[in-house]
Amino acid sequence: MRVVVGLVVAVILLLVLMPLWGMIGALAYGGIAWTGQLLSNGVLTDGRLAFRAGVVIGGTVSVASLLRVGWRDRAWEYAIMAALLAFGFFLLLLATGTSSVRYVPPSRVSQDLMREADLARERGRPMWTSRSGYEREAAALLRDIARAAARGNVAVVDEKLKQLQDWAQSRQRAASWTDRDRHEAARQQFGRSTMDAQTAAERKASSEERIALLTTMWDAVPDVDTGGVQRLLLELIGLNHALRARMADSVDADEPALSIDDQVRGILTLQEALLSYKPSYPALWDSYAAVVVDVDEELALGALLVSARLKQGEKEGSPRSEPLDLQGRFLARDLSLQAIWLPESSRKRLEILQARAEVLQLPRRGAAGDDANGARRTSEQVLPAAQSATTGKGLNVVRYRQQSPLAPPAATSPRRANGEVFVDLPAAGFEAMVQPIALPVSGVRTNARLQLVIDVLADGTLSSVLVEESTGDAALDTRAREEAARWTISDRAPKAGERRRVEVLFTVSPAAADGRVEQATLLPGASSRDFLATLLRDKARTKPARYPPASAREGLEGRVLLAITLSGDGQVKRVRITESSGNRLLDAAAREAALGWSVAPGMATSDVDEVTLDIPVTFRLQ
Image 1 (tube, one colour):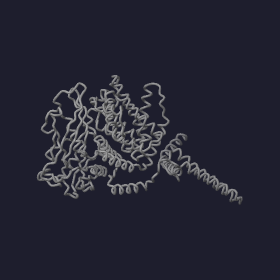
Image 2 (spheres, one colour):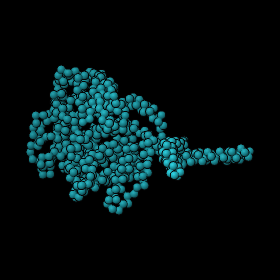
Image 3 (cartoon, one colour):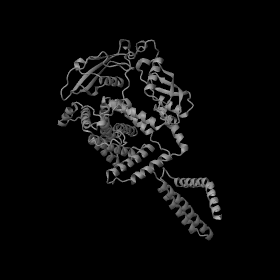
Image 4 (tube, helix red, strand yellow):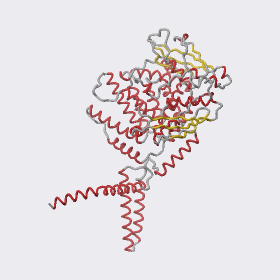
């Protein structure tokens, strides 16, 4: 009986004292970690922290023992030995405290963020409050770079590429201890994983495990070289296997696998994120072109031209491109090999665009001869039709243009735009249209000429629309390219297809001949303020605020009233919350989205210095 009572009392004491023991253990572990981190210049792993803690504790005990013996025996030799031993322990402590990651104390993080925000405001650079916000803005900028390169706007490419590099440098600050520890733990586990599985099931499980570890590394710290590119390689290998299996019709219908469409979308999103942190990596631009070739041929051509420009900068010693180390060269080689595994149709489209990029680079390099003539002949070939990824014959994603940020904006009524457009469609073999191109709201600022190259297949399909000679106005080029994709041919094309060139002329209306757009012409009866308000509301609808995941999970809804100050040229200068939703996350998400709502009113609001507009943002769960 006494034994039973003793056991019950012991269990009760165990349950009562367990929280206390847990607190004591947490304090002890925290003290060991702090001791191990002492005098380090980086974020260390748990093993190195424990070793440094042992060095500090053991060194202190050893030196104290020698000093005690020396004091008792009145022997100065012990003091000298203690000093030498302390110096040795100190050197060992310094040697084990180096890390490639600089540690920023929590008290310094907020100061660094405030200082970064001040510098961003001084340089006119946006300040991002989240990683996802930065990646969205940077992805839009790199797409602008690719389109400018495809249209031959070299000055715009250099300017925006420098801007993106500046953005990337501003994001290279130390992450939190938790993120660094998570990244380091996943990196060590990834290093221990092997690829020597024998069966197909083992190989698949090993690949999925490695992708999961690389995803953990990338989500913790956006390190392009360590985890980002390796994850991209494994994702590309998985996509190639899925395409081959789809072509062989060997996909298990009962297997709950990610669709190929979703795989392509995920890879494109990852590539844009990688480029947003390292825009001077030519191999990433080449890889991006290889995957986006069936989704948007203009982006693919532009990416190839940006890559060629960066490689040329490497040869000339230009700072446009960063030199790659040995690991970077191996990763670049592996990325280039992925293009060999593309479906045949996609590979053919990529080869034609590569030849076109080669021709566009020829005048700068002064190349000539048979290779140049061969590149010119290949570049004039008609692009095959983009094949669907779901068939395994291509990478064109079903409904991608409606779901991705690459989708063109909705056409705007021409009554709100100033200027006229002239296209002789019958002369180019297309059916005449009353309104062949709907002008953007910015209108035509100066008389301009545009030349489009349109690839027409034998069945009348338009497989490609590219801007060969740009107007210099990105809005006009984009709208013309989007509208040309809906034209219909009036005659039969050859069996091998045909490349047609169409000239488009843009002219300003007489009311804007002096370079200023009359308000009555642009928006009858409306003021510049009303016009900016209309554009801002349109931008808020096409680029809505992102619902914070935490608030969505909790079912929180609300309405935020923002006071947005725009300059006369449509740039967002300040955003102030005048009416809160009552939830900090919803307010921050609305303000972050508003910082990216700059518009392009053209010359219509040149008489405005700045204007403040009230825009409501409503968060409502469907």
